[in-house]
Structure formats: C-alpha cells, structure tokens
Length: 501
Image 1 (tube, rainbow, N blue to C red):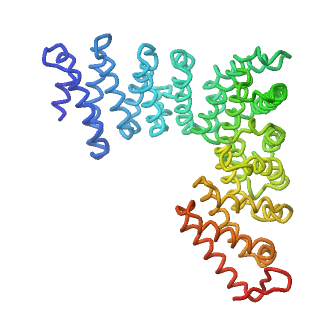
Image 2 (image 1 turned 135 degrees about the vertical axis):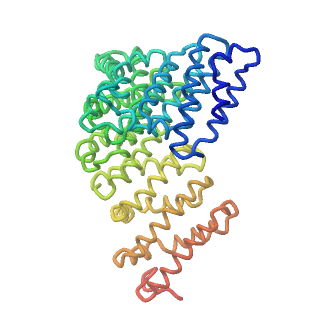
Image 3 (image 1 turned 30 degrees about the horizontal axis):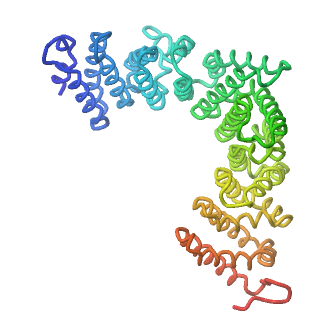
C-alpha cells in the first residue's frame, strides 16, 4: 500500500503520460475510508507517508490543471485522520498552514468551503494540539500564530465562511488556559469589534433609521458570529460578552421601538415593510439567538441571573407583549425556554413575568385557529413543558389564578400538529405526576380539573385524527385511573359527591 501511495503521489509520475489525477482521487478516498482501522502506531507511520507525499504533489501541481482536485484530496485525508494530527503537533502545524493557504483561493470557493470544513473538523478533535509549544523549535503555538494573522485570513472569505471559521476558532480556544482567554478573544474579535463600535456610534447618533441599513446589517452579521463562537466556546466567552452586553440590550430595545413605530405607521402593510425595518427584525432575531446560546452554555447560572437576566427580560418580554402578533418573534419563546430550563428553580417574580407577558399573549394568538404561527406553537409547548418540569409549584399557582394555563395543555392534545399534541401529552403526564404526588395539591386539582381532563383525553382517543399518539393517550388515561383509585377515600370531584368506583 505504501509503495502504491509513493508511486501515485510522486511528482515525477505526474509528468508521465499514464498518470491520471482521477486515480489519485480514488486512492485518497480509499485511504480516508480505512480511518480508524489501524492502531495508533501503524496509523501514524501510514498517514505520515501519505501526507508528506501528497503535500509534495500539491506543490508540484500548483498552477496546473486539476490542481484543485489534488488539494481537495489532501483536505479530505486530513479531515479523516484527526487522531494522528492530535498526537503529532508538528504535522498539525503543517496541515494548518496548508489549509490556511486554501482559505485565500478566492477563485475556487468550493475549495475554500472544503478547507473550512476540514479546519472545523480538526479544531473539534485536536483542540489541545493547537496550543502545543516547543521552546527550541516551536516557541509559538499554532493558535497564537493563527490569531496573529487572523485579520489577513478573513479578507478572502465570504460572510458564511467567516462564521464557520469563527466557530472553529471557538473550539480551539476551549483548550486554552483560562488566563489567556480574554486576550485571545480580543485578538479573535478585533475586526468585528471595530466594526461593532463604528455601528454603535452611528446608531446612537440621532438619524433616520432608514438611512442606517448598512450598520443594521453589520449588527446582524456580528451577532451571528458571536452566536457561533458561544456555541463552540461555551461559558468561556463570558469575558468578551460582558464588555458588549449593554450595547446588545440597547440595540435590541432601539430596534424594537423603531419596528413598533413603523408598524403603527403602516398597520395594513405589515407584509411589505421597508427594507431597514426587515433588517432590524433580522438583527433582533440574531440577538435573541445569541442570548439563548449564552444562557444555555453558561457555567454559572446564578451569575447570569444576577447580572443579565433582569436586563434581558426588561428588553425582550415587555416588547413581545406590546408588539403586533405578526411582529412577535418565536425565538423569544426559545430564549424563555432555555431561561426556565437553566434557571427554573431560582426564578421567582421573573416566572410570573414570563407567564403573563409571554405565555398569555402567545395563547391569545394561537387559539384563534389551528394553522397560523406554526413555529410559535411548537416553541410555546416546549416552554410549557419546561415550566411544568422545572417550576411546577409556581406554575400550579398560576393555574389556580387563571385556568387558561391548564386549558392550554388540554387544547394542545387536540392539536392537528403531531409535535404539538405529543408535547402537550408529555407535559400533561408530567403535570398529573407532580399533582398526584402532593397530598396538598391533588384534592384541589381533582376538584377543579380532573373530570374535564378525563373528558378531553377520551375525546382525543376516539378521534381518528390523533391515532399516531394513541399509546401516549392510553398511558395518560391509565395514570389518571391509577391516581383516582389511590385517592378514592379522600377524593371529591364535586361538592358532596364522592366518586363511585
């Protein structure tokens, strides 16, 4: 096999009449397909020969026809052997240098995309090797060298490619020393932060929002970059976030106010809003995605609750309640779902605000029919599921104050969207489980809601539109019957009428 590799990847063989680039591609595919089939020692010897020979061939083929195919073959093999690269920092450095060179191939976007995908794969599996140093031969780590030239690397990439690169760098920085993270993040975000400051300065200057489309687009692009980095870097992004968090909240508030003014001015043309207003909606959505990732990946939920949650709720929740239904973003429901999931037991007055300013307005939107706002429906029932799972005492208190929060679950099991009905069934199952395990709660639950719950479950079970969830419906009915049997002696479903068993 090694002899075949040397012959096919030999630069001198490329001059021969019988040599074909397609043969090299097939051989590279075969090499990649056996990744993981050898032990580490055999793999190291094998892949070293393949990589060195293929790199020599890439140099010899530079500027010639089909050179891009040979470069793609190299990228493919590198992405298939991350274990070897993680164990050999020297080869990792060579591969990264080669991959970064491909980033500059503006004339071949496909090769750029493949180089970025390969770099992302390597970053995920070899993050520790990016920080390897040797005082004699490699005083600078690969990570630091990349950060030093990062501005030059960005110039030849499209916006989508830049996002992939930032996500990969987030994986690399996860293996960095905690003390080095702030300075490395400052280097990584030097270009976006400069653009961000320029946009903030322009947006804070009193002006007509319709003249600020470029800066609004900059905000959306940079927020998407930050979201990708948070997704890969996790809670270590927090030092960078703290510096820009006030600007993010201010931007969200200003965009929301501008959108509300534009909607009030053209209430009958909401589907044809001006381009700057659409850009603001898009930027606001990217901010919500970023905040969701930030709360989801945090390693210190109490810190997020103490320093950020109040500002987040103040900027987003009140705007959601006041906004026109068509302007309400379903990503806010996703953000609230993550807030409840990560901070649920710690929430107090914040939970009442979520229920009254997010859940109730959304229910009013959705109960008009079973079709409109499909994404809002799914996100709402994910939120209700987390509320019951993580904040049941507070949710029960809301149910006793307003039955709409329980009737929403009954309405959900009759929904024509399968995902919504299954979420509602699972949430009801959990709700009944919590209520049935509490001697203080179950009598009140049985007196006010049990008979209606029996009726609704039986109606859905006999409805041919909901056959796919029949097993879950039967399980819920069985749970209800078991609870009634267990509480027979003390249960009253109505005044003065004990249940007949």
